[in-house]
Length: 432
Image 1 (tube, rainbow, N blue to C red):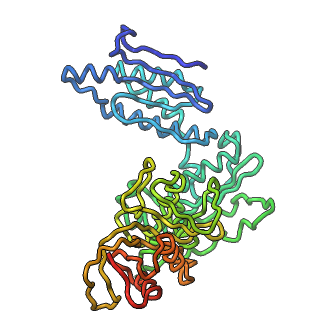
Image 2 (tube, rainbow, N blue to C red):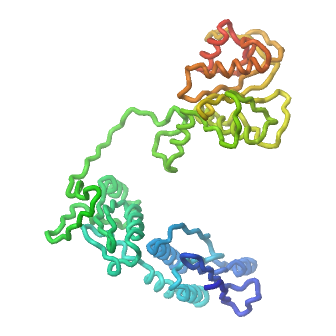
């Protein structure tokens, strides 16, 4: 099948002409009604060109059942289409192309939506029957027609969206199913009926008849370990636990499936060194004039303390073209075992005051000597209290050519930062 266009108005060369485009794909055909020029022309005359509610409802019903039908047939991908009155898109099987074209033509020109309703009826699947309670065998060619493994995957998805546990198994020519309603899902639907309109519990208290077919054992795990088991009981308690992890992420269920786990691993063990970097030593000094791959690595590492301490901005933002900074902005990265485990951001400044690190002590008189200033120090959790922070501060002092007592610290200083400063410079430090 090749692409083609069906014009619905008298003059196909008119830019306002409505047209139906048929585009074949590997698994299905897209039948799309193009009303773009028609809507613009109607709007310019002050007329409304929105689709009637009956039209929209009929189209959405066809879209829903067509998507299910294509997934049932084995299509592994997803679908996208726009909303509004300018385009109407129907993904349909090859066998329903002509019916879809005629249904859209009748709906658009004659305001006759019977064609769309009939098309939805032919594409609809007996999902409610497949997910009915009870143990049974669905036979290929009788109850369904797609390959058993494909059908079972589709049915699992429909059961999951309905809050059911399928307990299914595919064989060579059939699929065994036993849909069950978990206690948690039953509780949700009973507690929040407004979120599940029309829901009826057909599964709780299901009693298998004596002549129920026996599901044959085909090896692997025993399938009857939970058969006729008693449901677990749920209780409401208020445990005194926090909702935030020490890495800076929340402890609630990860909706995106791995964001917290990935960030926590980097926070705990460090950020993996990219394979395209030749790291020839233990510590590297990255400036605002370094190659972009190094500056991007600093930016990635800077996300760790930002999340952990809930800062508004990262301590490194130099991702544009290489540029020279007046205050010599730079970052020190320490690596071990293939990971960046330590990070220090610094620049040079001549505004300092002495401080003896006492809780009630005030800062001393201003001093305008040029010194390196620590903006931030971060160490991966697994390497803390092992001298990594001290190594970074000593590298900063050596790089500047000054004793470690001449290094300046940005304020405010965190509790762990104050402990590090007191250990390195017990007589006091410079702050700025």
